[in-house]
Length: 333
Image 1 (cartoon, rainbow, N blue to C red):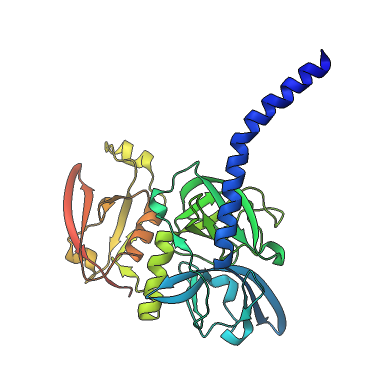
Image 2 (cartoon, helix red, strand yellow):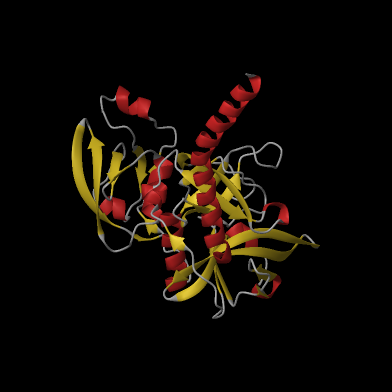
Protein backbone atom coordinates (compact mmCIF):
# COMPACT_ATOMS: atom_id res chain seq x y z
CA UNK A 1 0.00 0.00 0.00
CA UNK A 2 2.81 2.43 0.88
CA UNK A 3 4.58 1.78 -2.43
CA UNK A 4 1.34 2.29 -4.35
CA UNK A 5 0.65 5.58 -2.59
CA UNK A 6 4.17 6.80 -3.28
CA UNK A 7 3.87 5.83 -6.93
CA UNK A 8 0.58 7.73 -7.17
CA UNK A 9 2.15 10.81 -5.58
CA UNK A 10 5.12 10.66 -7.94
CA UNK A 11 2.71 10.47 -10.90
CA UNK A 12 0.76 13.48 -9.59
CA UNK A 13 3.99 15.42 -9.17
CA UNK A 14 5.00 14.54 -12.72
CA UNK A 15 1.71 15.95 -14.05
CA UNK A 16 2.05 19.17 -12.05
CA UNK A 17 5.75 19.48 -12.95
CA UNK A 18 4.98 19.44 -16.66
CA UNK A 19 3.45 22.93 -16.39
CA UNK A 20 6.50 24.34 -14.61
CA UNK A 21 8.81 22.49 -16.98
CA UNK A 22 7.19 24.37 -19.88
CA UNK A 23 7.93 27.64 -18.06
CA UNK A 24 11.51 26.54 -17.43
CA UNK A 25 11.90 25.59 -21.07
CA UNK A 26 10.66 29.04 -22.06
CA UNK A 27 13.25 30.69 -19.81
CA UNK A 28 15.98 28.51 -21.32
CA UNK A 29 14.91 29.40 -24.87
CA UNK A 30 14.81 33.14 -24.12
CA UNK A 31 18.24 32.99 -22.48
CA UNK A 32 19.76 31.10 -25.40
CA UNK A 33 18.19 33.47 -27.95
CA UNK A 34 19.24 36.72 -26.27
CA UNK A 35 22.70 35.82 -24.89
CA UNK A 36 24.50 36.66 -28.17
CA UNK A 37 23.12 40.21 -27.88
CA UNK A 38 24.43 40.66 -24.31
CA UNK A 39 27.94 42.10 -23.89
CA UNK A 40 30.25 41.72 -20.88
CA UNK A 41 31.97 45.04 -20.08
CA UNK A 42 35.21 45.70 -18.21
CA UNK A 43 36.16 49.36 -17.76
CA UNK A 44 39.61 50.28 -16.48
CA UNK A 45 39.39 53.42 -14.37
CA UNK A 46 41.74 55.66 -12.39
CA UNK A 47 40.45 57.60 -9.41
CA UNK A 48 42.46 59.39 -6.73
CA UNK A 49 45.69 57.83 -8.06
CA UNK A 50 44.19 54.34 -7.79
CA UNK A 51 43.45 52.12 -10.79
CA UNK A 52 40.72 49.53 -10.78
CA UNK A 53 38.44 47.59 -13.14
CA UNK A 54 34.67 47.80 -13.02
CA UNK A 55 32.56 45.05 -14.55
CA UNK A 56 29.12 45.43 -16.00
CA UNK A 57 26.99 44.43 -18.93
CA UNK A 58 25.43 45.91 -22.03
CA UNK A 59 23.01 44.96 -24.76
CA UNK A 60 23.38 45.34 -28.53
CA UNK A 61 20.68 47.53 -30.08
CA UNK A 62 19.98 48.87 -33.53
CA UNK A 63 19.84 52.68 -33.56
CA UNK A 64 19.68 54.58 -36.85
CA UNK A 65 20.56 51.33 -38.68
CA UNK A 66 23.81 50.99 -36.73
CA UNK A 67 24.86 48.66 -33.94
CA UNK A 68 25.30 50.29 -30.53
CA UNK A 69 25.80 48.79 -27.08
CA UNK A 70 23.58 50.32 -24.40
CA UNK A 71 24.71 50.23 -20.78
CA UNK A 72 24.68 52.38 -17.64
CA UNK A 73 26.85 55.48 -17.54
CA UNK A 74 28.23 54.54 -14.14
CA UNK A 75 29.71 51.35 -15.61
CA UNK A 76 31.98 53.16 -18.07
CA UNK A 77 32.32 56.76 -16.79
CA UNK A 78 35.95 57.73 -16.23
CA UNK A 79 37.31 55.32 -18.83
CA UNK A 80 38.17 56.25 -22.42
CA UNK A 81 37.14 53.92 -25.25
CA UNK A 82 40.52 52.13 -25.33
CA UNK A 83 40.10 51.29 -21.63
CA UNK A 84 36.67 49.71 -22.17
CA UNK A 85 36.81 46.04 -23.07
CA UNK A 86 33.69 44.47 -24.57
CA UNK A 87 33.33 40.69 -24.69
CA UNK A 88 30.64 38.65 -26.45
CA UNK A 89 29.14 35.40 -25.19
CA UNK A 90 31.45 33.45 -27.53
CA UNK A 91 34.58 35.18 -26.19
CA UNK A 92 35.20 37.74 -28.96
CA UNK A 93 36.78 40.92 -27.53
CA UNK A 94 36.79 44.47 -28.91
CA UNK A 95 36.66 48.15 -27.90
CA UNK A 96 33.99 50.76 -28.67
CA UNK A 97 34.82 53.41 -31.24
CA UNK A 98 32.61 56.08 -29.64
CA UNK A 99 31.04 56.57 -26.20
CA UNK A 100 28.09 58.85 -25.38
CA UNK A 101 26.48 59.18 -21.95
CA UNK A 102 23.89 61.15 -20.00
CA UNK A 103 24.40 61.64 -16.23
CA UNK A 104 20.80 62.66 -15.51
CA UNK A 105 19.42 59.25 -16.51
CA UNK A 106 22.55 57.04 -16.18
CA UNK A 107 22.14 55.84 -19.77
CA UNK A 108 25.15 55.36 -22.07
CA UNK A 109 25.60 54.05 -25.59
CA UNK A 110 28.78 52.83 -27.28
CA UNK A 111 29.25 52.69 -31.05
CA UNK A 112 30.82 49.45 -32.19
CA UNK A 113 32.43 48.48 -35.47
CA UNK A 114 30.53 46.53 -38.09
CA UNK A 115 30.64 43.24 -36.24
CA UNK A 116 28.25 40.40 -36.92
CA UNK A 117 26.30 40.75 -33.68
CA UNK A 118 22.54 40.27 -33.44
CA UNK A 119 20.63 43.22 -32.02
CA UNK A 120 18.18 42.49 -29.22
CA UNK A 121 14.47 42.91 -29.84
CA UNK A 122 12.79 45.75 -27.96
CA UNK A 123 9.56 45.39 -25.98
CA UNK A 124 7.09 48.11 -25.04
CA UNK A 125 7.87 48.87 -21.40
CA UNK A 126 4.62 50.84 -21.08
CA UNK A 127 2.75 47.55 -21.54
CA UNK A 128 4.83 45.66 -18.97
CA UNK A 129 2.75 45.03 -15.85
CA UNK A 130 3.43 44.25 -12.21
CA UNK A 131 3.59 40.48 -11.77
CA UNK A 132 4.96 39.78 -15.27
CA UNK A 133 7.78 37.23 -15.36
CA UNK A 134 11.16 38.78 -16.24
CA UNK A 135 14.69 37.54 -16.91
CA UNK A 136 17.89 39.46 -16.09
CA UNK A 137 21.17 38.78 -17.89
CA UNK A 138 24.42 40.38 -16.80
CA UNK A 139 27.82 39.93 -15.18
CA UNK A 140 27.27 39.79 -11.40
CA UNK A 141 30.62 39.94 -9.61
CA UNK A 142 32.30 39.58 -13.03
CA UNK A 143 30.56 36.28 -13.84
CA UNK A 144 29.60 37.12 -17.40
CA UNK A 145 26.31 36.21 -19.04
CA UNK A 146 24.61 35.01 -15.86
CA UNK A 147 20.83 34.54 -15.98
CA UNK A 148 18.32 35.15 -13.17
CA UNK A 149 14.54 34.92 -13.13
CA UNK A 150 11.74 36.68 -11.23
CA UNK A 151 8.80 39.03 -11.60
CA UNK A 152 8.27 42.73 -12.04
CA UNK A 153 7.60 43.86 -8.47
CA UNK A 154 6.63 47.52 -8.96
CA UNK A 155 6.68 50.42 -11.40
CA UNK A 156 7.30 54.15 -11.08
CA UNK A 157 9.95 54.04 -8.34
CA UNK A 158 11.33 57.56 -8.03
CA UNK A 159 13.38 59.73 -5.67
CA UNK A 160 15.69 56.80 -4.85
CA UNK A 161 19.02 57.34 -3.16
CA UNK A 162 21.45 55.27 -5.22
CA UNK A 163 24.87 55.81 -3.67
CA UNK A 164 27.07 58.78 -4.54
CA UNK A 165 25.63 59.27 -8.00
CA UNK A 166 22.49 61.36 -8.32
CA UNK A 167 20.17 60.17 -11.09
CA UNK A 168 17.91 63.16 -11.60
CA UNK A 169 15.26 61.64 -13.86
CA UNK A 170 13.98 58.45 -12.27
CA UNK A 171 11.09 56.21 -13.24
CA UNK A 172 12.41 52.76 -12.31
CA UNK A 173 10.94 49.31 -12.58
CA UNK A 174 11.49 47.20 -9.46
CA UNK A 175 12.19 43.48 -9.81
CA UNK A 176 12.99 40.54 -7.55
CA UNK A 177 15.08 38.84 -10.27
CA UNK A 178 18.48 38.59 -8.58
CA UNK A 179 20.59 41.62 -9.49
CA UNK A 180 24.09 42.05 -8.04
CA UNK A 181 27.07 44.35 -8.66
CA UNK A 182 28.03 43.70 -12.27
CA UNK A 183 24.47 43.32 -13.52
CA UNK A 184 24.35 47.05 -14.27
CA UNK A 185 23.66 47.77 -17.92
CA UNK A 186 22.35 44.31 -18.73
CA UNK A 187 18.88 43.71 -20.16
CA UNK A 188 15.70 42.87 -18.28
CA UNK A 189 13.61 40.69 -20.60
CA UNK A 190 10.05 39.53 -20.86
CA UNK A 191 9.23 35.92 -21.78
CA UNK A 192 8.93 36.93 -25.44
CA UNK A 193 12.67 37.61 -25.40
CA UNK A 194 12.15 41.37 -25.65
CA UNK A 195 14.16 43.92 -23.67
CA UNK A 196 11.78 45.85 -21.43
CA UNK A 197 14.30 47.57 -19.13
CA UNK A 198 17.98 48.22 -18.41
CA UNK A 199 19.20 46.82 -15.07
CA UNK A 200 20.72 49.67 -13.10
CA UNK A 201 20.85 49.42 -9.31
CA UNK A 202 20.04 47.45 -6.17
CA UNK A 203 18.75 48.33 -2.73
CA UNK A 204 20.94 46.35 -0.37
CA UNK A 205 22.42 46.56 3.12
CA UNK A 206 24.91 43.79 2.36
CA UNK A 207 26.05 44.78 -1.14
CA UNK A 208 24.42 41.70 -2.66
CA UNK A 209 20.99 40.86 -4.00
CA UNK A 210 18.14 41.13 -1.50
CA UNK A 211 15.34 40.84 -4.03
CA UNK A 212 15.08 44.57 -4.69
CA UNK A 213 16.58 45.59 -8.00
CA UNK A 214 15.85 48.60 -10.18
CA UNK A 215 15.84 48.95 -13.96
CA UNK A 216 15.24 51.83 -16.37
CA UNK A 217 12.15 51.20 -18.55
CA UNK A 218 13.26 50.62 -22.13
CA UNK A 219 10.99 53.24 -23.67
CA UNK A 220 12.70 55.86 -21.50
CA UNK A 221 16.20 54.46 -22.12
CA UNK A 222 15.67 54.41 -25.89
CA UNK A 223 14.40 58.00 -25.90
CA UNK A 224 17.67 59.02 -24.24
CA UNK A 225 19.80 56.78 -26.47
CA UNK A 226 18.31 58.18 -29.69
CA UNK A 227 19.01 61.74 -28.56
CA UNK A 228 22.57 60.82 -27.61
CA UNK A 229 23.12 59.31 -31.07
CA UNK A 230 21.38 62.15 -32.95
CA UNK A 231 22.56 65.16 -30.95
CA UNK A 232 25.46 63.96 -28.79
CA UNK A 233 23.52 64.79 -25.64
CA UNK A 234 20.08 64.62 -24.06
CA UNK A 235 18.15 67.76 -24.94
CA UNK A 236 16.15 68.01 -21.74
CA UNK A 237 12.86 69.80 -21.81
CA UNK A 238 12.68 72.99 -19.74
CA UNK A 239 9.38 74.09 -18.17
CA UNK A 240 10.63 76.72 -15.73
CA UNK A 241 8.87 75.97 -12.45
CA UNK A 242 9.94 75.14 -8.91
CA UNK A 243 7.88 72.29 -7.43
CA UNK A 244 6.98 71.41 -3.85
CA UNK A 245 8.44 67.95 -3.01
CA UNK A 246 6.31 67.73 0.15
CA UNK A 247 3.02 67.96 -1.75
CA UNK A 248 1.02 64.72 -1.59
CA UNK A 249 -2.27 63.06 -2.49
CA UNK A 250 -3.46 63.89 1.03
CA UNK A 251 -2.99 67.57 0.26
CA UNK A 252 -5.04 67.16 -2.90
CA UNK A 253 -7.86 65.52 -0.95
CA UNK A 254 -7.72 68.23 1.72
CA UNK A 255 -8.15 70.85 -0.99
CA UNK A 256 -11.24 69.04 -2.27
CA UNK A 257 -9.72 67.55 -5.44
CA UNK A 258 -10.28 63.95 -6.55
CA UNK A 259 -7.09 63.51 -8.61
CA UNK A 260 -4.79 60.64 -7.54
CA UNK A 261 -1.62 62.68 -7.97
CA UNK A 262 -0.16 66.00 -8.98
CA UNK A 263 2.72 68.46 -8.64
CA UNK A 264 2.35 71.79 -6.81
CA UNK A 265 3.99 74.85 -8.39
CA UNK A 266 5.91 76.93 -5.82
CA UNK A 267 7.42 79.39 -8.26
CA UNK A 268 7.34 80.29 -11.97
CA UNK A 269 10.56 81.63 -13.48
CA UNK A 270 10.26 84.87 -15.49
CA UNK A 271 10.44 84.37 -19.24
CA UNK A 272 10.09 80.60 -18.96
CA UNK A 273 7.76 78.38 -21.01
CA UNK A 274 5.65 78.02 -17.86
CA UNK A 275 5.14 81.80 -17.67
CA UNK A 276 4.22 81.92 -21.36
CA UNK A 277 1.65 79.17 -20.64
CA UNK A 278 0.26 81.37 -17.82
CA UNK A 279 1.11 78.99 -14.98
CA UNK A 280 1.00 80.57 -11.54
CA UNK A 281 2.25 79.90 -8.05
CA UNK A 282 -0.17 77.50 -6.35
CA UNK A 283 -1.22 75.70 -9.54
CA UNK A 284 -1.40 71.91 -9.30
CA UNK A 285 -0.31 70.15 -12.48
CA UNK A 286 -2.29 66.89 -12.66
CA UNK A 287 -1.79 65.92 -16.30
CA UNK A 288 1.09 66.51 -18.71
CA UNK A 289 1.09 65.54 -22.39
CA UNK A 290 -1.94 63.31 -21.91
CA UNK A 291 -0.44 61.38 -18.98
CA UNK A 292 -1.40 61.67 -15.29
CA UNK A 293 1.20 63.26 -13.02
CA UNK A 294 1.95 61.23 -9.89
CA UNK A 295 4.20 63.73 -8.07
CA UNK A 296 6.99 66.25 -8.57
CA UNK A 297 9.64 63.66 -9.51
CA UNK A 298 7.31 62.14 -12.07
CA UNK A 299 6.70 65.53 -13.68
CA UNK A 300 10.45 66.24 -13.80
CA UNK A 301 11.02 62.97 -15.71
CA UNK A 302 8.08 63.62 -18.05
CA UNK A 303 9.23 67.15 -18.89
CA UNK A 304 12.87 66.15 -19.29
CA UNK A 305 12.08 63.52 -21.93
CA UNK A 306 9.42 65.46 -23.86
CA UNK A 307 10.15 66.73 -27.37
CA UNK A 308 11.01 70.39 -27.69
CA UNK A 309 9.22 73.04 -29.74
CA UNK A 310 5.89 71.17 -29.75
CA UNK A 311 2.64 72.28 -28.13
CA UNK A 312 2.18 70.04 -25.08
CA UNK A 313 -1.25 69.94 -23.38
CA UNK A 314 -1.46 70.27 -19.60
CA UNK A 315 -4.31 70.10 -17.11
CA UNK A 316 -4.03 72.10 -13.90
CA UNK A 317 -6.12 72.78 -10.81
CA UNK A 318 -6.39 76.39 -9.66
CA UNK A 319 -8.68 77.84 -7.01
CA UNK A 320 -10.90 74.77 -7.04
CA UNK A 321 -11.34 74.72 -10.81
CA UNK A 322 -9.88 72.60 -13.59
CA UNK A 323 -8.09 74.35 -16.46
CA UNK A 324 -6.46 73.23 -19.68
CA UNK A 325 -3.41 74.96 -21.14
CA UNK A 326 -0.55 74.26 -23.54
CA UNK A 327 3.18 74.77 -23.22
CA UNK A 328 6.07 74.74 -25.67
CA UNK A 329 9.18 73.43 -23.94
CA UNK A 330 12.65 74.78 -24.64
CA UNK A 331 16.03 73.24 -23.92
CA UNK A 332 17.23 73.11 -20.30
CA UNK A 333 18.57 76.46 -19.08
